[in-house]
Amino acid sequence: MTTTEGLAEGLAEGLLVPPGQGRVVHTTAQRVTFKVTGTHSRIASTFEVEVPPGFDVGAHVHTRSEELFYVLEGELDVLAFEPRIRTPDNWQRWESSSGTRVVRATPGTVIVVPPGCPHAFANPTETPAKMFFQASPPPDHERYFEELLEILGSDGPPDHKAIEELRSRYDIEQLTPLKHR
Image 1 (spheres, rainbow, N blue to C red):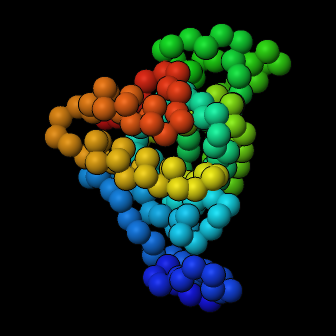
Image 2 (cartoon, one colour):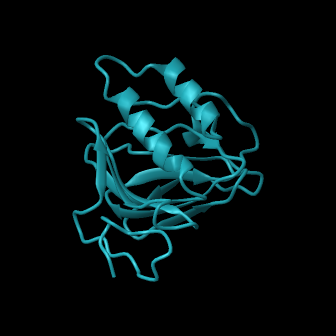
């Protein structure tokens, strides 16, 4: 088994990423730790994501990516369904044709999002939340996180035009706005 450093193409060894290890990309409020990247897996990129209070990724949809979220700490409001009506403002009020509504996810909750399924998460509490996040196929989400956190780390309010352009490059159709304190 190897650690995250030095895994050569074609080696028949597993990967061990100890707690607290991995490549970290962060702003003062957000932190994403890259645990498994496209360098190590043809299947998926894996991250540990800290979601600060008040952060709302906004409802969005991917045509190619499949995602899995597992809440480790804290609480998140989440959705993973096609709503009756895609309203452009508040996804927290959406409801599916079958009556499914937004759920408050607590530690141990798993959310699986197939390609084409609208989804969102937000931290409505005053404490940070942490989740395990997996995206397939790699490496689109790796590049996306690097560029998004660079935008969010700039002084002042988020540059929504830059975020919109970034999302369009990475197969993300934004349905409601990203919100960041």
